[in-house]
Amino acid sequence: MDNDPSNLLVLEGISKGYNTIQTRIEILKQVDFTIRKGDSIAVVGASGIGKSTLLQIIGTLDRPDEGRLLFEGRDLFALDQERLARFRNRSVGFVFQFHHLLQGFTAMENVMIPCLISKMSKQDAEKRAKEILARVGLQERFFHRAEDMSGGEQQRVALARALVLEPLLLLADEPTGNLDIRNSEEIHQLLMELNKELGMTVIVVTHNNDLANLMNQRVTLKYSGIVPLQ
Ligand SMILES: Nc1ncnc2c1ncn2[C@@H]1O[C@H](COP(=O)(O)OP(=O)(O)OP(=O)(O)O)[C@@H](O)[C@H]1O
Ligand SMILES: [Mg+2]
Image (cartoon, rainbow, N blue to C red; front, side):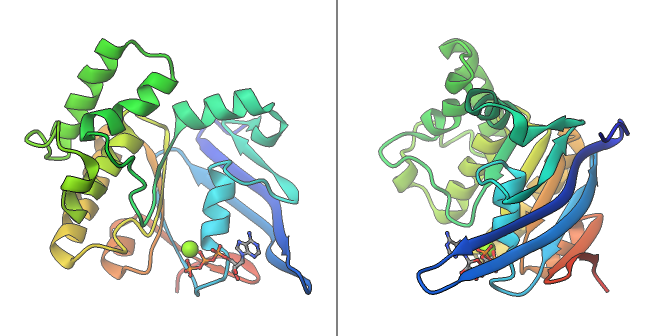
């Protein structure tokens, strides 16, 4: 058991493969990695190497075939489905390349969803959603529907939704992969500011060097495991 209180997450011998029609492919092989509280980590690596797979496992959206994931010393995959879902809701924020906002719903409604899932009152959820939307610069867009906003605005709503419950861990998979340079830079800046303000731990998968360089640690995922960049 990992007992170092400065560790947020410890990956121990994580392996994952997929069965396809013809054969079985092994993607992650015995990956060991320790993430300390407050770290900001960029994960880079070749396309198809398993970066998204790794992030999905860290966020408990997918299960490894072997290995353990310890969050503050707790073995996450030993939790039952209900506890695991609660953990995900409270402790992990996700941002993806595609914003995955609910179409037809306003920025406010999209951001309030994690709060309502956590059984917060509607009033508190509204207050929190307004605060975080204002923090990402969308005070003029509270009642815009998702599809009526620009790509950069939609991704800022997605960031607000990921952060509204102030998770300990933010996972981002190519968060600016679909944005132009100006919007990407804005999101990069926000990510770093919020990482400092909220003291959360950030793991970002990216092909964008500017974003990777803002993180205090850069690692490469290879067939042999996770190695420091350079
Ligand atoms: N459900 C699945 N069934 C079969 N194979 C899968 C499945 N999900 C992913 N894979 C395969 O696993 C490998 C790793 O995929 P993953 O999406 O993690 O790569 P990645 O490093 O994120 O790549 P990219 O940089 O292109 O996003 C790929 O070869 C992919 O085809
Ligand atoms: Mg990917």
